[in-house]
Length: 241
Image 1: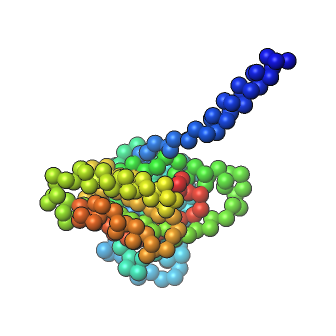
Image 2: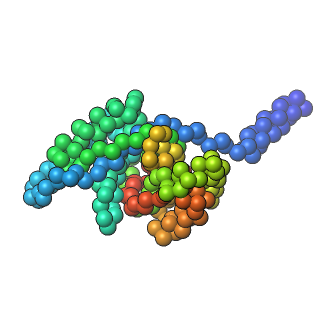
Image 3: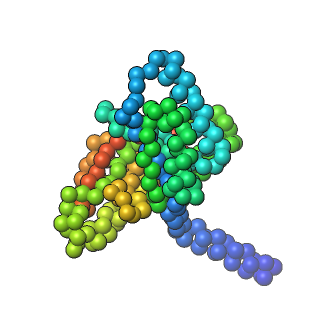
């Protein structure tokens, strides 16, 4: 009886220790983020043409998701439209991601052009969304607007080359704090060489709050990074943080 009790106490102690041990965050994962930008030769469409292209576009999105290539997508909703929307792919290469995006009906019909980048984003994008929708296809999308921040090389990128590494380390630490504070849905670096350095995607918080948070980033303050802000519509449970 005493032996059984001792074993039970050991099992309980082990379970308590496991419960108290913090779960390590998932490592970054390779993705390809493709921005669909309005084509220069975009023409005015009739209502019927617009509806036809949009229906084909949505059908293609569903097919790419079913094929396991597309893990996230959503439109941008800015007052000045420089980006129509974004695809986040799991693909074998940047060239493959570009080729897949170029088959989208909005690109084929000269509504959009493709702007692709290799991105080290958080692992698990789309996993929870897929799990819930497999359990219940009627799971609400509950799309919300997320402040979507694109970080480019700033005016002082070259000027502050001697201190750039430390400023970028401070930037990473600052983004990690934003995540710990529950402000972010995803973030990660764009693979060099690229004028676009990284992406920071907030939860559905007020846009002004996201701007204030980014203005306090040490690399942004120093002019090493420049932030381009966008309004991005995304469904619930797509982004992992």
